[in-house]
Length: 237
Image 1 (spheres, rainbow, N blue to C red):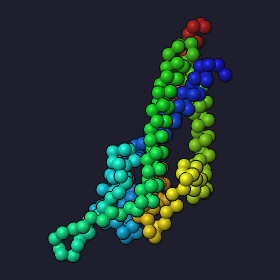
Image 2: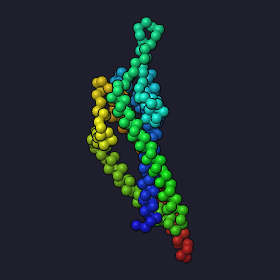
Image 3: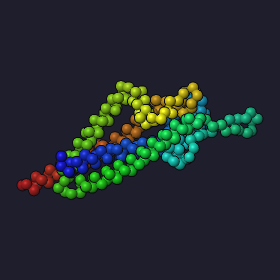
Image 4: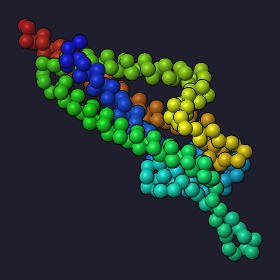
């Protein structure tokens, strides 16, 4: 494999990683989306959380994950019985907050990877595309890289369709080896607010947004390869 094709493969991989991590940051930072999906997949009659507080919980969660808020906690208003004053009651327990702290660490890591892969993608694209003589090989490498990543994504999609619970558990065992993610629906609001359907819906939204990136890369690579071939034909005639 020539150096320009290798640059294309690596650039495609870097762009894909940048896209995936960028989508994760978008989802984690969109409090409105999180609150709306909580309400849609875990209604008040299941969670015990008043409907009027879902938006606030969503914003608090996003702010905590993205570092805008230090503590993972939300308090709901409860009447004291005298008809005038209301008390605020915190709804998350210490072990739930500890698990979300672990999640925030993953988001911080995701941010570093997103920035690093974005820089790498730009540098590799410049190195492979700017030299005119290497554009054809670079474009071919991009297509190879996209095919490789597509194969990996298809494996995980198949796994999710066949055994979503197995994929979910495996991810948590890898991401949270220290434990803390096994919550009880009877006592822990966090797990009631975020059932399996919640993550599936967010995953589908993220996948739809991410899908534009490989399409753009593929179209770009095909155009570059065609232009390069046409130029070679002109020079040979």
